[in-house]
Length: 168
Image (cartoon, rainbow, N blue to C red; front, side):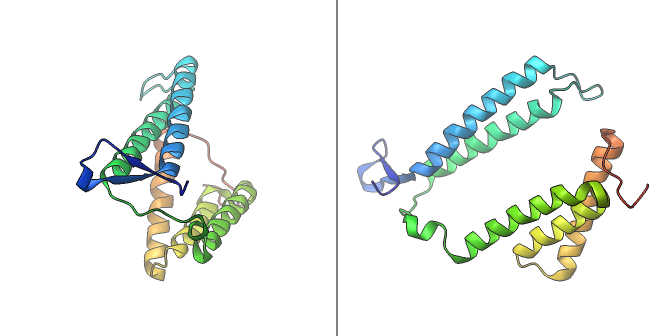
């Protein structure tokens, strides 16, 4: 098996190929979404002005289910060429994945000491740098994301964030 499935319910002259990895990852994400959804209901969702402990989990599970549906929809509608396993993790893709994992581990370690603002800004610079953006766009994008997420969590949701070296 080359990792693809030919779907028989399309016209014979327009057969689509759906990657088996999309099916498996979609099913796994759907199960995770259902589990998190039911767990959030047991915890209590609450309301927007008075969120319960399951509030974020509830909306995250719905977002995951929507993204899974989009994955299935795109996989069903677009014609794809079979992907060879040898090409799946070549050169830059592997390097970027390792950099992202390392950046997240470093972020996890430094956020208590340097605080949310500085650590998240540095993380976003690294992640935008992987996309080969212009330096001014990396800085501006990182700054916008950090300030908006800080405002959302600290002011609107009143979630305590690590202050680190900045005490405001």
